[in-house]
Image (cartoon, rainbow, N blue to C red):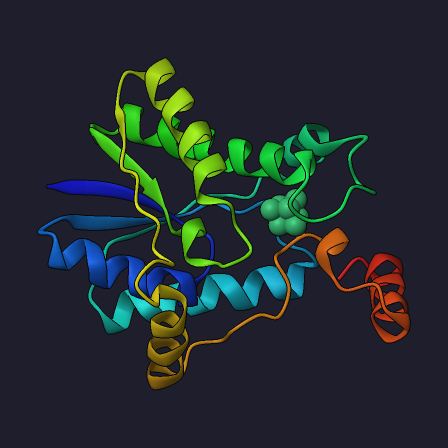
Length: 193
Ligand code: SF4
């Protein structure tokens, strides 16, 4: 059965795809991440997802990043820490676009690779996914891909495949704010990528 799989990044997608295949699902990758900043980083993560889809012969849809709408979604929450309401809004934004695409294109089920990350709260993602699924009258597939050493498996697979691995979640607010990283973030903001 086809599943529209929101892909946050290629490394997280590796174990998700592997497990969905084991269960007999056929995942179609949906890269939709207007949260990734700066643009150079967005390009790297998108290219890694293209690389994975080519290596494993997966169908991939690349969504145009609607950065203005994403900025509106998290406005006022920029200074909140990772894992806060800002992230819930960011995840909701991306899952809503995934559900919209699924509904328009005849997919009955959608899911996300976001649960591969140990930093992501699967329970919260499930709640968001379910609420959106109800609205669109489709199903959200609950899978916590980090379980059973899923994160380690994603690291192992992405190394083996030579995929780019990032070291922060995605938005500039998630770049570590120690002294060196603070300077880096400032440069990113000034250069706009
Ligand atoms: S830290 Fe990650 S999940 Fe949270 S708002 Fe930034 S990009 Fe989105």
